[in-house]
Image (cartoon, rainbow, N blue to C red; front, side, top):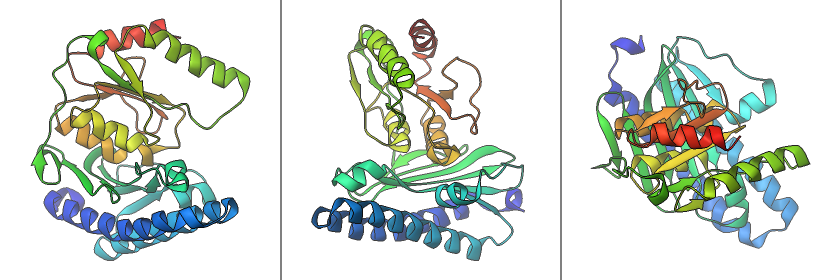
Length: 270
């Protein structure tokens, strides 16, 4: 069972899978600039699937009894229920729109949950060669160097990240932009990276102070980053302030000093 296995071994396996998938993404990334839009969409789909196949095959080979949840397979076959069994949760290419446009904020996210608790996290941006890692109780790292969340205590001096999502119906867009409009009066500035996993890593290494997103794709967007934030001394929680639920498609993250003020600002923005 995974509980008796080596967490450092699980991390090593995930890093190896991410780096191999990164080679596929790098190749596709530099090709997209020379194909038409339909080709770009097809290429992204093929790249996503090729990366997920590679990662899943690698994980299955190493840990045949572990469960697997991935964005592409879940999109095709429906949501896979998260159980207490050791489960690898994979986003083979987070930041698909960025990938299509040749914008370099793309990544592979691999998380391992044991007893539904995020335990190992790997987020790798192969274009910028940034490898974020975290293991429960062992700290968080960027390219092998320890990272920690910011020490910012004031909302007004904080850098906020969020995403607008993919829905474009008027009610959703209005709710999203109204919330952003409210928050902009309370923070220093706003960033949208196009990648939930990289936003979480931004919190972990102190580039960002605040992050929230609702309605994102699924647990594969947050499984890796959640471990990394927590191991960097940060907090991951529901935007309401309640406990984080990896299956809820709702997430907020910050350093511990900002949580209460951030949750209050989020509630006032609704």
